[in-house]
Amino acid sequence: MSKLTLPAVPPQYLERLEILVADGKRKLIGLVGPPGAGKSTLAEALRVSCRVSAQVVPMDGFHLANVELQRLGLAHCKGAPITFDVAGYGALLSRIRTQTADQVIYAPEFRREIEEPVAGAIPVFPDTQLVIAEGNYLLLDEGPWMKVRALMDEVWYVAVDDSLRNRRLIDRHQQFGRSLSDAQDWVTATDEPNARLIAATQSRADLIFNW
Image 1 (cartoon, rainbow, N blue to C red):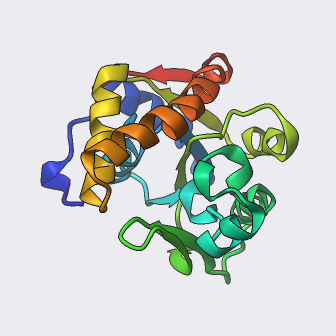
Image 2: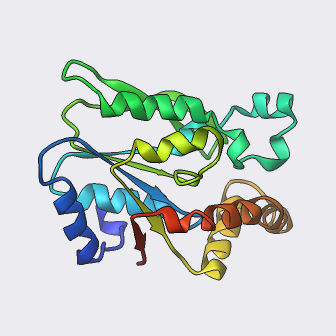
């Protein structure tokens, strides 16, 4: 994503980020919000706006593969909390927190064009001061997800108008191959229940982000 196409981050959020990284130590900031909130756009905008070295490590790389979702009978609810390798995600965050100067840590990436995670696609370099993690369930306080919040220095909740968010989702699903009716059905049956679950975690965030 080109820096020129990114929206400007309001200055009060950049100032908060500058305070967070001022001590020169590695920091992990999480961006959480429902599907279509604009988390990946904000993550990239923060990365290019931050004055220290920064990288984005999305949670989406820990989607279970489609073949495993089918084996488990979960293909119909892909994107729900139970369709992620949350233990693997927590292990990655723990490694990132304790990364040594001689290590490069590899994170997976979710590729929408194939609807699958790809292992080892994101190298996290040891001189990276700010790691920006973004995903739906960083503040979920149930099961193994509870450990994720403790691995972050701060978590920001990305708030957005629901009608705009749903339009974005329908457009996204169509872009990657669904018909309009299929996209609308998926948003209603899958994305919206997840969105309500995520919205219920908002009170645990350190900051509410609004464009």
